[in-house]
Length: 131
Length: 145
Image 1: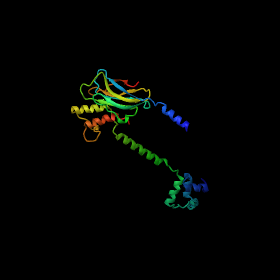
Image 2: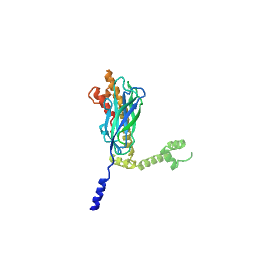
Image 3: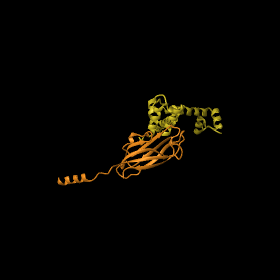
Image 4: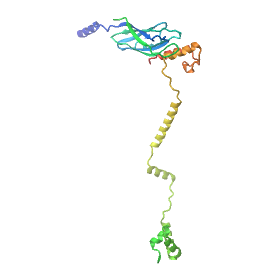
């Protein structure tokens, strides 16, 4: 009985995995053309990080709520304004709870310039918060 | 030819296999013609009488004698299935490409500009294409299921 108590005590003393909240900013660069519509996919190892929230620019992007608490999300948005932002644009911020070191992968699924011409913007991520 | 026809000659005349000389002799000689008639009578008596086999017995015998061709109905069924599948595939509308946000944007733009929009974008089936359909296109674009 004493041994069991000792084991349980040791387990209680072992620190749990340190969880930390981070944000990943997603930038799209359409190289001078206005970014009228964009759709990207963000992936990470769900055992190391879980998506907990999404922020957008002027309006929050579309996403599937089922993606929350997972490691994969598709984000998309569009504007019918005649002159959407061009250059390097912050399109979304994804909040995650990390429990380990993980890499983030992102890919463009679709994007369009004003009028509907399909374009291929480049994407870069900036991770903020945490250690 | 001298003398009468022998037995083989008589039977050849009966069977229609005789030479012209044998036939001519049989026609002119009463003894030989009587011999040919005797052969004909004998052949008629030896011929077996036709049996009247009932139809179901005939069918059963034939079904045993002929190998059953089971592959025929299977082949016919497969051919019908193939034809049906081909017709179905040909009549099926071609699947649109995976919906993405550019589709939502294009529909929203056309709505804004008052341009005509194909009815295929009436995703909620309410008989018109409007901003609710644009939202639906966008939602489907980001679905991870």
